[in-house]
Image 1 (tube, rainbow, N blue to C red):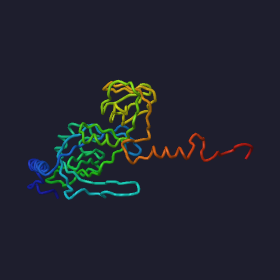
Image 2: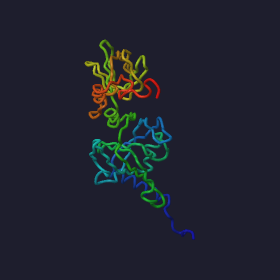
Image 3: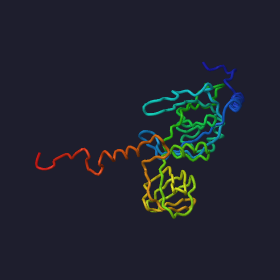
Length: 291
């Protein structure tokens, strides 16, 4: 039997009123956050992931923090592999405001909705979260319409993505955690490199992004390096036009981390194993005669 035609399940006017009230409540009791869309660079269609993602824009939008008593999740975990912080939080945002503030101004992987894998920066806590799941049916059809998205997020774990949003607090993630190497340059160069510019090797055509430049020690620290620089080549800044000759650099010594041990292990191993041998554990196979 059909529904009673004399009673409505929510008129357009009523639905719009509820939506306006939702937006007003979020604006009154929520916090400003930045929504950061992910851009796929080299998608792996087998595993469904992209190891070279970029984040090139950030859009401010108000969000209600559902977890008023603190972050959820497993918190800080100590193990033999170090400390892992797995804070979780749920942000509630208005669908209408998401369309106005983000969807109309950004290219999303899936248009019309927040995307799993995108980031949300929470300035109040100074933390950036990755969207794990987008809840699209809570509250459940008030007056026949849903007005909000629920973004279930977990603390973002940086893995060498390119982050250039124009918001200093967000871009600092890349600057502080990207793999960084030091290029030692010879005396007699010209100009000073600028932080954030790209530099190119004249012979190898390798490219890197400048994290810092110390003219007194001629130490140029690069992140986001592609290719392999060559000793003796000229390194030129694409913006500053600074030009210096490269003496040497070390790809194993990540100066952005106090815990990486690649260079220490390599140094210690050289005193134990002779890597010039074809097989340091002994020759094998038929060394003469017949088997």
